[in-house]
Image (cartoon, rainbow, N blue to C red; front, side):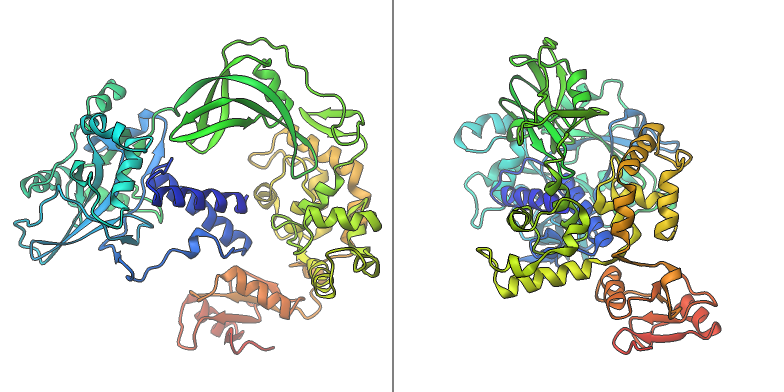
Length: 596
């Protein structure tokens, strides 16, 4: 999942820099936030991750924003636009978010929103170069955009697919773009964030264009935005008075006093041409619809996953049917409706790999001969599994030719004296694989079960059930009735039970190879450690380092009488946990000086 999101984000960034972005800045930020959350959760950070590009330093044309430019929380429920206190409603202008900085009334910088902390320098023409302000430093926030009228005049002269992409292309140009004069700027807030109405009136007095503003939700939202002279992608609602905004405050991602209503995703008609089957990460077959090319939100799409046979059946598909396609949340292609409903398509019954009979369970296709087991092993070894570096599916298939891998434990009994004789395997690569396999034996209970790919059980779902149990305790929980936990219905529980009924013995045998981190019964030294404060590294990375050095230690989240070691970022660091540590007489040390 992480690799897919990174690939998607980097593709969007490249398209954005070339003025051809299919998504808005805020939607790009949402993907970045998902990547950051997964990186924090897994401790895995790839060099090509877009989070590694973000810098808080001002250099090479970057400017630090005077205040963080947060994104807005989104909704598709128009009822959420109403507040219990006075509020305003505006069209959500579709363009590029920009900050203007004035010093002593003179414009000193125009910067894009970028990551919300720093922005790239841009050029804008249709803005006040001087303002009558008594403030030494003053910043204005708004949207750079092109009116619908101007777009209709110039769209034939450009290669851009939509208004927003053209704005990005013009502003990202290294030199002043010949179409720069067509770009307008609509201001919607300033650095003070006072009462919304007084702020807008002040901005208008300074010479800025402002969006149409209402003090109630209009009956017809679509008509409200359609009459706007600029392109829109929704409606924004904000609490009007500063005292109420201050009470509501902010999250790390967005202000709690504002929300953006997004209209339904754009849908296009097309014709279904074929249904093919791809192997999923868990060794099952996933149907994929192939259809005539359509363009949605500036990108061309030709296929959409159907996930399982239940969805295929619900859509009553047949080759040649007319279907409606959308990009769910402007990202994932999806068939939302079949306009023909021929219901003539019959799913395959034979395995395309070995010709064996296919079985169906809860709409999921799998081969009777388990011929996709190497795909399961590949997932077990992947970064989403136990991160056994060097064991890709391609490598596993090579090894399987001379050292059959028919169950998980075979992975830990590979005869490397045979492997090294295979083409493409040298001493160093074989040694690296051996070390990675050995390292994987020390993992958490959650990582182990997640790598197995239990049906309907993502790592996130497993974490909801996990309360620091031992392996045996967690296995007992999974074999029991866990429908009382939020989000776990009878169908999920039944699927897990069926899986364990078939595989419990082999899983238990496999578990004997592992030393599970965090199991107190295996903690011979009884050392419990806790981290507090802000470190240069991610805490997940530090914990990993400590456990590699002291595999029998246990991380705890708070300081108690049982805590032995408290790790702090610097010698002069203080906090309530440090006070507890002193009181409970535990060892307090920096990471650099950590010994026990």
